Image (cartoon, rainbow, N blue to C red; front, side, top):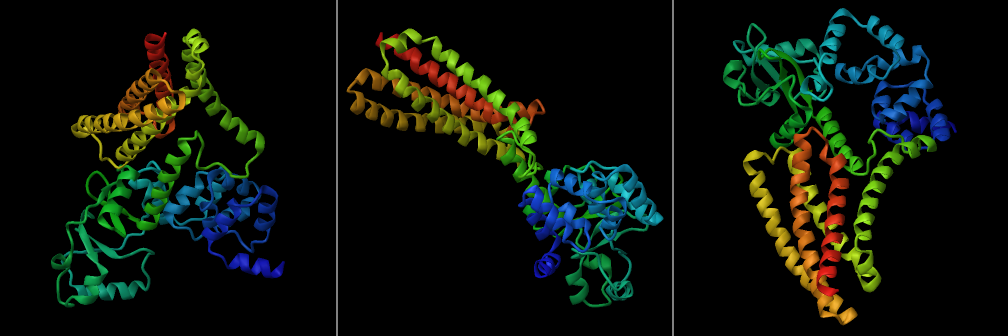
Length: 426
């Protein structure tokens, strides 16, 4: 037990967080009690539901201690989950300057550049030499984590550009900062959406970037470690939303709570299933006369569902990356319709051949070929239009797109197949 405790306390906070999330509740408490002290970073590296449970195991003194030493942006993320009394104690233990910095971060939405930023910026003026900058850095003694550049500002604190540390170290000491700064590196306005910030870091290979207010005054910086969290959260959100789940849910949460959350989504899917069943019931007489149709219904519906899901996934990703807008959405629709037509022809022929060889019925092969063709084209149309319309309506396409798409492809596929069969075979 002592050796396990030593190993546990030697782990990085992120590793401890991953371990806690992977343990059932009873074992999680045992591991939690084995920690010599609770680092606030551990709480930041678990999901909201797990964090809430761990916070309930801690007294006020331990929670206040956990907030000490955290960077301002991390502290802002943690404080929103702490009890009000603990938050007040943590704020009262901070000096006036840090409290002002924290309030500045908390004033912005957490999903914006302002909510991601830290206020520990290192700034220099443009009219000094690099030798002066070097002496200033030696006087400071340390630099904030993730510092790859210094921020250049004018006398009013307006952002002018960045001064890479590599230039400070390799350029002539007599060179002025204004001659060495990089004024092409953009600063993010505080209200910029976090997803836009993340894409810019990815595209431009940024390590850090400045954050400015509406008047171009430097108010903070964003580092790549915060952006990695945004990218991971967006990826998890997309995956979990398609199943109607939350990425913050506890893997080993209470059975009743988990079942309750999933019930809503199962209910929605049940309604769509009944809709498809109702469409089938419209052709009850046809099915009674040609029983083989019931065997082939899943073929048409599933082909449309898979094809539509492929298009839907591509479009949702394009919307998330800002690659789809009014200027190219029509072109994308035409392209996907062309893909749907090509795939429709290919798989209609294949499905028809299989059905003819299986049931020795050329008319049945023709019917299922036509239905498959129609459903694949419809799936392409729905796969493009559904997420675009949902985004316009301010609804998350990842959350609702899959259910709507499945309903459309099932209903149209079944209706086309049974409708054509009723018309041509009876």
